Length: 448
Image (tube, helix red, strand yellow):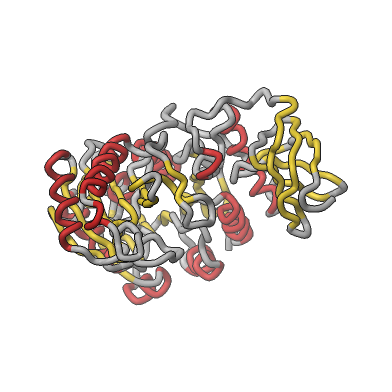
């Protein structure tokens, strides 16, 4: 088999990028536009050596799980990997993803609960970055980047993010069109290359204008238009980030209007959110996830807890603020924000900036429980050894956005004398290939 060959395949599985999975002559084929249970005619578009990538040309027999996608551009932007299957089946797949991660590290008997969701699969995102393009045919248009490119797929709306973001974007496009010369660079690129939104549950909105080049007049006109028409826009900033580079945002923020932040409430805790803050994009599901974590950790009244990777303090302050709370984070601005959030909530938490082990040793800190919520790469083996072998932490709550690194890290903890309870998947990202999980690991009485 080679590039441009046509195949008829029965699709066996669906991966977290939304590709159907099949095999031919012992070689895996990833098929775009196909779902598990389909029979398709497809064309090989790339030979990657150990596997093929193919594109569906014709649907021969439709899977029982297939549905008509509600979004006309989902197959092009790639944001909704599971747009073409029922949500019940999506939850089955995500549970299987978590279970499969544990099988791969040699832990096939771990109990995985059903995937939890609050029933809301649309308009849940409180964060969005919407790129702006320009062409002679379309004028100023907005949309989303095609996967692994800087090519914008035109789209007037999105079924995942808050509808207010779409409304503000429509006004921004109109304002740019009415002032075309001002909003185009000499190279014919939009001066404002992206609109970056953060939103609170009450619709308070933070807007950052990502700039291709500085233009005070363009920024002034757009800021005035948006804040005049939308009372919910509480603050506007700019972020200078020219060129086709892999990072959408730079560190170069400037405050234009308002205070530079908004507030949201999570499990009764008031939290200050800045453009650079980490904050879960699905606020309602984050509440359920954190409450489950508190239930699993089951702290006694006098027990102390350390929130590692604490960010702005959202986990600790939302569900552990009545306990002696410590937070550690390597991002200095996040630590300062966490300290402010603690004051907002009348909590006497201690927050430190630095490497976890170094801070704990330097400050001679002790606690009964630790909360881990690391980035996708998971924890380092050194940190796990430090917490489990040297500090002998009694209880560790692990919240993970990556089943593979959760399984890897849990296996190391089990080898160091810990026992693991049920793993609970929480779907904070419906229609996408991502799933969060939470599990509590407890030091065994038999551990030395």
